[in-house]
Length: 163
Image (cartoon, rainbow, N blue to C red; front, top):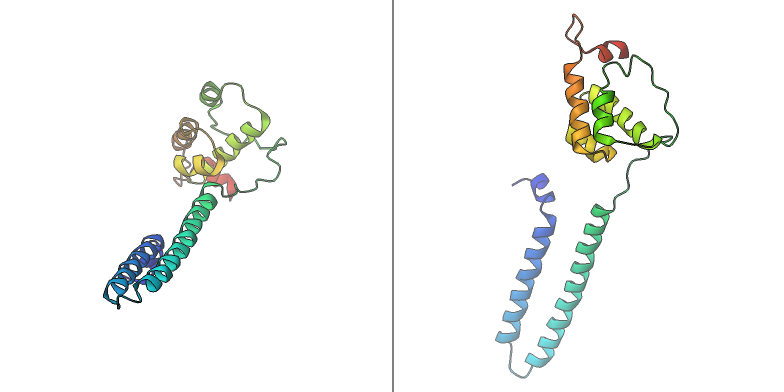
């Protein structure tokens, strides 16, 4: 197991180390002389309590950061984004409006950005995660990109226009 594989399991390894330390501390308390057991027990219990509080704080902080990570800034999505007719060639207006219903400008700009990203090869799940769009809308966009006419070189029209 290489170092890179251990990196994905840091939390599990940390919990395992704490459990091993707890077992070793319990063994130290039972094996030690009877007169020292109360003092060693209090010290070990205090140490484990501190480790437990720090561990819970770390796990909760890690969970909070993953849950509330900042979304990427899209600079100007609240305003109208001028798109050329070539960039919107093949855009499925009817299917998207059927799934979205009434949508404000910021939402439509995210849909247009999703169209551009889909035309550059991003899949529906990636678009949903990145732009916070419904999955069915992203799937419609990706499917529409796949249905676009191909040029003689085999590239989609938008890819040809990009060059």
